[in-house]
Amino acid sequence: MTEHHRNSVPPTISQVAQAAGVGRATVARTLGGYGSVSASTRDRVMRAAKELGYRPNAVARSMTTGETKTLGLVLADVGNPYFAGVLKAFTDTVHKQGYDVLVLSTEEDLAKEADAVGVLVDKQVDGLVLASAASRNAPPPHLELVRARGIPIVLVDRLFDGVDIDTVVINNREAAREAVSDLIGAGHRRIGFVWGPVTVEPATSLAEMDEVIARSLSSDGERLRGYLDALEKAGIDFDTSLVTHVLKNEHQATRAVIGMLSLADPPTAIFATESDAMVGAIRALRQMGLSYPEDVSLIGFDDSSWATIMSPPLSMVSQPLEQLGRLTADCLLERIKDTAAPSTTHVLEATFMPRASVAAPRRR
Image: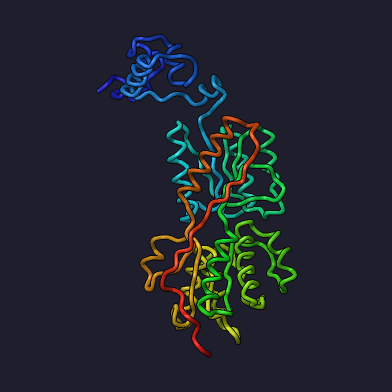
């Protein structure tokens, strides 16, 4: 056992230099990642640092290099399997480039989001990823704080109209249109749309939908547009009573779906646009003594392993979470290298996974 382990005293850069047989400046260049160091010298320094358990001082390193080697993520809900999947792929990618990651969750609260962004800016992160709770037509003020500090930023899952920032999203509109078209192809004309999280009042007519979509999260709005596209193509009249506005809470979704299924002319199929909405829909069916797909067909977003072990398995839209996380990481790392490059919006394709939760509607 080495002396510093016995005494629990952190080793110093001088001790690393002595163990490697080089000067302090050489150790600083090697561990700081700047200047010129031969491969053999680098190997000796890194081996000595590892054996001694040396960890470089992040503050001192940032004063020398202008970098903290730390990236920040502000996500809507780290407990959500979607964001958890993106986060894992992101951290796996940036760790290989020597970056640490700070993650803050906002619970879709703009005030918490602003605080989280402020914390990461104060910590002088080298770059930031944001999944914002702001509506697409109202970019939050803290975006300008980040840009004013010159911190590279990438938006993930959410985008804003008229904002020149690197963005990584999926083709929400097309994916929703494909899913709803599958229900229409099975013979359904009364299709419920359960969406969330939203913070706007429901529309009372089709004419109001554009405004509702503009004031919603971009992902929610695009999925609603896809639903409306499918109805229009099939010549199905839009019924506002079949669009349920819920927050990101499965219990609220349950109550909303029960209300929808209690209509005089209830839906024969439901499209749930995120996991909690789907869980709420299934709970609502059970509470009402109904089953899928015999009584009501179901399609959801955010495919996961639990959807495949349901009986019967659920038809779902699968999002490329690993690809989203890796691409978000790559975009941020590239932006850190070249802050003057033109911004890009990357749109990845989701995949519809048809299973056994869709059947022809029962005759009334």
